[in-house]
Length: 130
Image 1: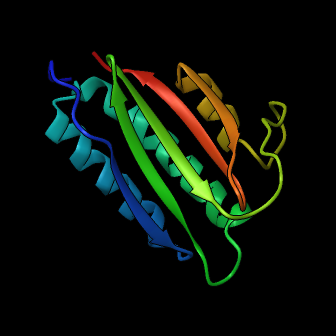
Image 2: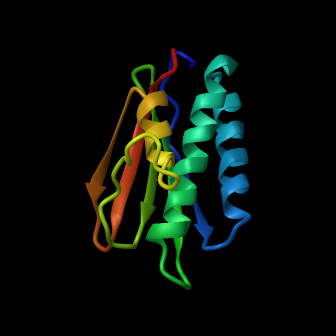
């Protein structure tokens, strides 16, 4: 990533299937603009896809959408997905046919978690991107 910390980027996506690839492309463009090494793209883009998909399937009520925020700081990239739905996202055990998204995020990202938002929640993950 460039030596100066660039400002965060964010975008709102409606509750529709095309929002997941659009979120990936938005992220890819930001990573490129920020000079993030391309070797980290695949893991970041996969996690953006998983978090966006989870928001659409479980966290976005009809008529609403989700907010994607990309926050670079100190050689780290924080990816946040804000939604207005309830529930507590959790990693499901390996072998479970559903819910592998957060398992992938937990394996690929340096760390991840869930924060409070009114209404809803913020599901986030972080990557070391120097």
